[in-house]
Image (spheres, rainbow, N blue to C red):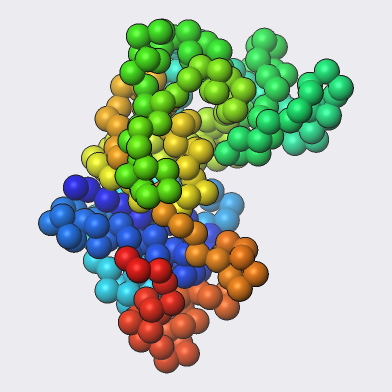
Length: 283
């Protein structure tokens, strides 16, 4: 078993991060496997060295150890570009010039009907799909129609992933209609970043040989996108465990701006790692 924790250095870790890291770490520990840490710093506009140092400090304080060297996404831009070139050579990418306002306007048109919501928000209506905009420096989207055609019926019949988490336990199959209507043409590279979370996480997990992915249940629907990309790149398929989210007293999921529940704050207040862990569900 190889598990991982992959935080972004865009803020301080909070109780939700602690829970996710501990779940993955202890699963690997129980299986006498390996636990990896990856720094997801593709968003160079928000990533900060101070936050990365805080990640290491907080995890060590919680008793979590990992293998070194640590993979950092900012060191893997060539791998992301190669993957985009692979898709582009097969006619599966197109450039999109739509702003968020353009997409909202297109989706509000009467002929669009009910707006479908996917992992990244409202499902893109394909406005730029056939416009042949220059790709250089543009946002790049996966042409989901051509991707389904490229994989073919045989591959699609075998496309599924296994969920071992209690809430979603079982095999989940990918169906063409669900991909078309529920996800649409997802962004694989943003013009200011050069890649996207979906593309980077799939390539990085494969590069690190991750066999079991533990993450919050808010990421469950994104797993369908990740499974599709694994099929396109012919990558191994990990098992998935989407655990419950840690929420505040009002039932809202914790966010990095919620500094009151940051691990560093608990540390500075004199609590022990055991005190913090007792605030979390059983692991």
